[in-house]
Figure 1: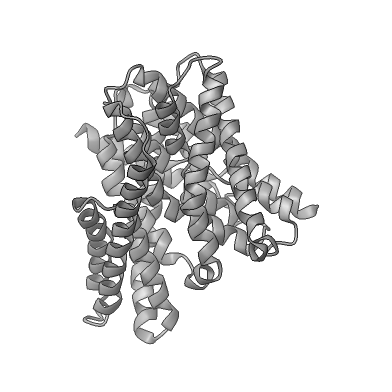
Figure 2: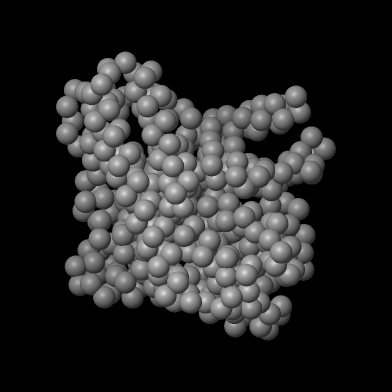
Length: 400
């Protein structure tokens, strides 16, 4: 009964916040919800309230990513495919190692972390949040391709981040040294397996819509495929996140046909997922705030700010190198430096970083609570400062 009361209160808060906020420009809804979640942790009803990593990972993440993927423009993906794929794979790996080096040297001045732990924290902080990023940039006056690139990168790098994280976590907990060959082999198996599973389920869904024109059954089929692709991929040791995302993107390409059947199917999905999506996302961000609160009372906030700054710098360097290396990408935007700054600042940490951080809660690693506190503090700093700063930064750079 207490759990039902808690969920009803969280849902009520979500409805009120979404009703009050209209433009979602200056201070986006996700940030407000996280801060409210932190405040709720001090109320007796929510004291001791915890959310298992499995609940966030297996219930919230697949649904949210499937919606983002199938609603993502297939034309935008085709237009920016190689850039999105590069940033979410090679760029992701490069950012993890560059940020890990920064964390390793910075923490040596305050509270030394081993190289493996620095890598692990970096893998947690590198994935960007498609929910918070896109909701802000869609309401700004920046270039349309910018929002498309960020949305596509955010969806795909959630999958690659989990692959990188699990490999590094295994090394940390076993005490083994980093092996480049083992890393590449594991990364290839889990990533390619997830993509392959997503293509299969995407093909099934794209053809199954012709079996029935009944809207309720079509919606049920989309739920089954979204979560089925995730669960089956995880069962075989592949990336469930990549499977769900690729399934959604495959469906987005199906909608390019714009036949009567596809249009009706899109309407049926919208009628369901456009209601479920804000419910899942709002409760998720309230959960994040409640879960983070106990870990925020620690004495190394200055180090968390340094780690946050390093994450922005690392993203700036990798993005700059990636975009500058290919003339076509470099010429894509007329104001290269302004776009690079905005892309770097838009790398907000969010739901996936929290899920990965919760993965370490029961880890046998020494001083894991301080590690988690550093992670939560860095995520919260990123979430508040970067979310609040994107809109004014976009306006400033647009004027210039």
